[in-house]
Image (cartoon, rainbow, N blue to C red; front, side):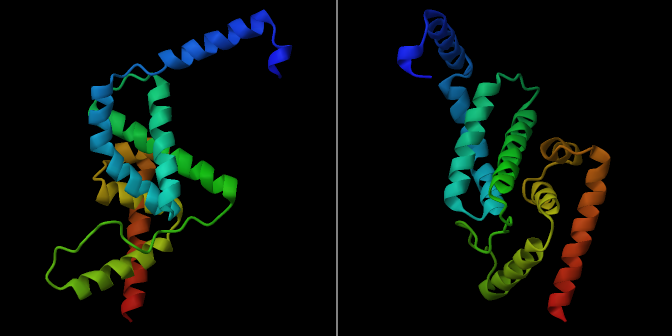
Length: 189
């Protein structure tokens, strides 16, 4: 539709949509900044692990917060808000994967993480072995392990984030741990 083709009712409708878009963001700057400071880094690392691309992780992170602000949700707690952000991020990563039909890598390098152990070589080797084992898991298994053991999410939170039933999370984590252990044992032999 061209501007010359717009009628007065079209202009009124578009103005109403523009006002609605402005009203969609009901959070003040200070509240958003506080939420962003606590959640941006773990969300970005999660997205970076899912996509293997830092620039794409940046884009998906921005889109995650944009959608979060547009929802107008009321959140029961800080954990509920965090879970909702991870759920949005997971859905965006899944959508991107479907759209581009590419394999979802598990990134082989670490962003800004230094080992705390004295034996840097051994720590680096263990991390490399674990990354290779994780890269052989299904995306959902990797996400569940990441959320459980890196983010410290409960089974209920993981179920909410991944859109699964709580009862299936225990089995999903069990199978994922068993597969990683098997892959690590094979590496040692």
